Image 1 (cartoon, rainbow, N blue to C red):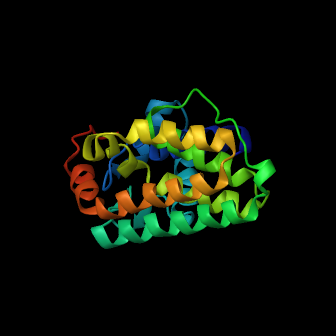
Image 2 (cartoon, rainbow, N blue to C red):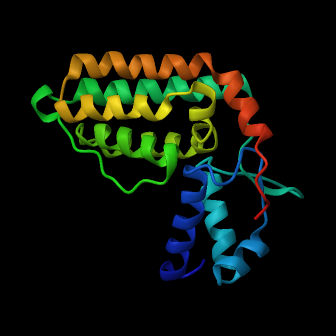
Image 3 (tube, rainbow, N blue to C red):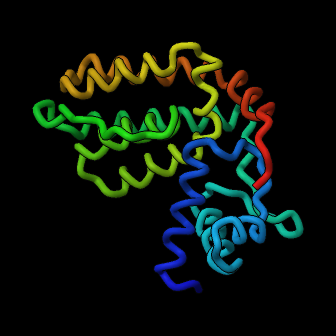
Length: 204
């Protein structure tokens, strides 16, 4: 096992790439190339990838190595529905007067901005298991959220509206907006899968 001072930054870097959609769905992850890029040995990269595999953020198979999971339409819809249920639990668990939140800035694209929004909403419920579960789904959706603006056309404007409702603490309107948010992505799942599979990102 790699020492924590090397393992944790390596893990954080790889997880961030998945969350922000830097790597598309199905992307093959080469441990040796990553180690050279990050200036570390192969061991912390492999340890990080094994940890990410345990969290279902990467897929590991004998002989094929590691890759970003390649979801089909049904699997993506299931993941979107699961995310909706988790966020709904967070909203139901939050007291109305405590709901008003300020969303952190400094995000890197739609994927991370969306993750920050829902993580902040979930944080009001003060449930660590819920926090972890929502963060995990956010990372698994990263390579699909990257394409939402292209597929939906107004994903950024929609996030801005959700952020405004969360900041105002309007629980009823936020619940309705969150439901609409997930319904749109559930309907567009086939287009998001197609966009993610067609993305032409370099290997790395």
